[in-house]
Length: 130
Image 1 (tube, rainbow, N blue to C red):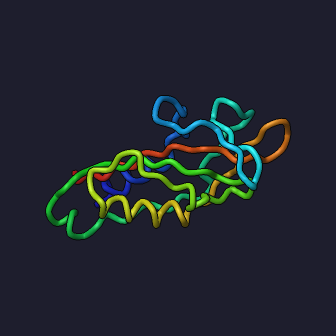
Image 2 (cartoon, rainbow, N blue to C red; image 1 turned 45 degrees about the horizontal axis):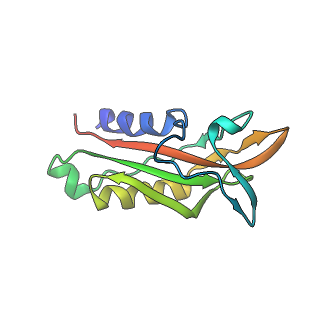
């Protein structure tokens, strides 16, 4: 079981992926501009990771998979769940587990020009049985 936790933690601790082809363009919203990782001086990063739980049914069936999500981390370091988007997922149960984990994870917000700013983040999660 420790290898499963390692695989999940590794997915959380990976640096924020470059926002390229499948990323949405930076947008303006009521909270101000939203930046991509290459547009900021210091990208958002995980402060307190919450690992997604491996759905018991999938674990017992030894189903492996992955989820790639995108969301905005606001100026307080909180994931805006209204911006949460699944870019790729192999199973809806994995997706729901990731959604719950992202909601509880805290981040260090991105900085630009010495100020905290909103940043669009892409985060991969791997579910592997070893």
